[in-house]
Image (cartoon, rainbow, N blue to C red; front, side):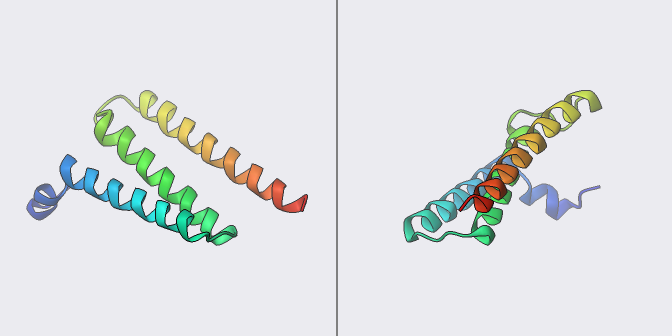
Length: 94
């Protein structure tokens, strides 16, 4: 249950600003040329968080049936796992 302060802060505009900040952060990381497993984990978790915000708040799937949420979040999890596995495999072939 959300408190009145959370209801005031948790709105689409603040989520959009947070997603914009995360996008600018990932852009800066790429522009600065950082790399490595820790950076990949940060970028992947940032992308997953942004996708979670989109699924829950912008697609408005917060109050739908469990089946739709399982489908959408399951898709997100499978894509993130596929990217992580591909990255790990690419490290072993260097």
